[in-house]
Image (cartoon, rainbow, N blue to C red; front, side, top):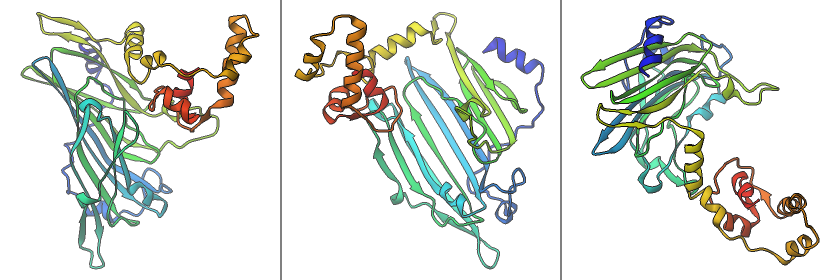
Length: 342
C-alpha cells in the first residue's frame, strides 16, 4: 500500500471533498420534499448516502473485522417500493460472521408537513439459513410509500481475513458513497480502483493505525443492457489487495497467489474435499463404460450420463453446498455440485 497509495495521494487526484459521516435519523426536509432525482428524473429511487467503515482489529494473533454499514434511500415511484425489501447475507459457519446492532427507520411527511418516523420492529427481522455457507436477515421497511426516505445501519463482525470489493455505483443513481479502512500499520494493503469517473482518496495516520477513505458522488444508475456480459465489468468500484504483515520482527506474505488459492480451495469442505466423496456407481453406467477403452471416450460417456441424470437448480456456484452425495441422490444441484460430480 505504501508505494501505490503515496503515488496516488501525491498527485492529488480529483478534488472531491469528503463529507462527515451521516448521522442516523438526521434526514433533511429537502430530501423528504424531493420529487425527482437530479441525476436521473426517471429514476424509481436514489441512494442518498451509502457507506462502509471497515476496522481491522488484531490481537493475540487473532483477526477480527468490523464492517459498519449505513444506507439511506429516497423512493420516487411505485416501482421503487421494492427497494424497501432488504436482505442482508452473512456467513455464520464456525462463527465466521454475525450481524449486530441493526437499526432501521422510515421517514415521511404527514398531511400537516410534519416529519413522521416509523422505526423497524426487531420482531419483523427474519433470520434464515440459505445453505451450508450463507444465512440472511431479511425485513421490509415499515411505512414506505412514494416520497419516503428510509435508512438502515448495522455492524457485520467477521472472524476471517477478507475484504470484498466496494461498489460505489448501483443500478439506481447514487448521490454519495464512501468506504473507509482503518487498520494497524503493520498490515500492507493496495487499493485497486476500477473507475472512469472522479473519485477521492484520503489517508490519515493516527498513532500506530492508518485510515484510508475513498469516496465518489453523483453517480448515474447503471442498468442491464443488451450485449453486456456482466454489469460488474463497468460498475465504479474499488477492491483491496492484501499484501502482507510486517511489524519489524515478523514478516508474513498474505498476497494471494494461484498456488495458495488452489491449496485453499482443495482444502475447503465444500469444494476440494468433495472430490474424495464416494458417489455410488450404477450398473447402467458400468455397462456403457465396459465397451469404451480410451480415456477421452470414457470421459464423454460419463459427461453425457451425468447430464442425463442431473437437473440444474438454476443456481450458479463453485461450491457443493449440499454435498455431491446428496445432490446425486436428489438428481438436482447447483453448477458447483454438478461440476464436482463430473
